[in-house]
Image (cartoon, rainbow, N blue to C red; front, side, top):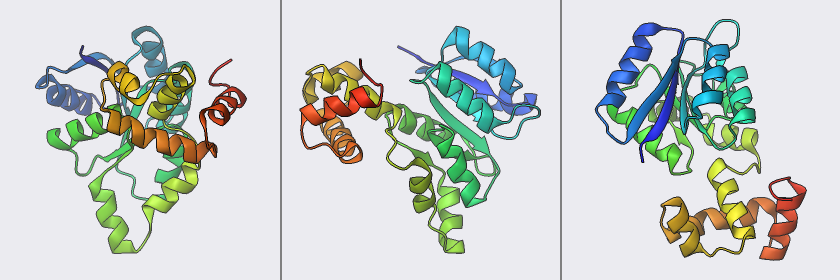
Length: 215
């Protein structure tokens, strides 16, 4: 099944460039283009994309606000932020708003875009290597900033796995259902247990109930 993607950018040329990059990959399908945050939210409601490519700097409703709204209506969709911002604390704030990855517009190309999308769809966080390089040069730990922003929040993939764990599924069954390996499930499961401070399934179920993930 093709993964549906919504492209959000106020610049037509950038939207066209992103569409061109994605059109060469049959596993993806662009289901909509939006030039504003408001338009993006309306399209997201009807098309329910698996992933949103979101420009951060837009007039009226910026990308950060748009990301928060999309997370409310589509909690299981992923968001890849596109921006030229280099401020480390600002990037941390973006992750706190609900994005799953950050790709710098200053260094974007088709190969990096596809890697970023696949990384996020696999349930992992993506951070542009361009930012890592700047991080090393400036002596700033961007990973710590992001970790501080996200805290112990579960990623979207971890939430999916948590719910399936509370239903009694094992790693192999969850992997088959989500089309990922049981080793990947085990890795996510370990992170879930750590973030929820749970030592067993009973504690995990209580955590899921308290957090509102299950009834």
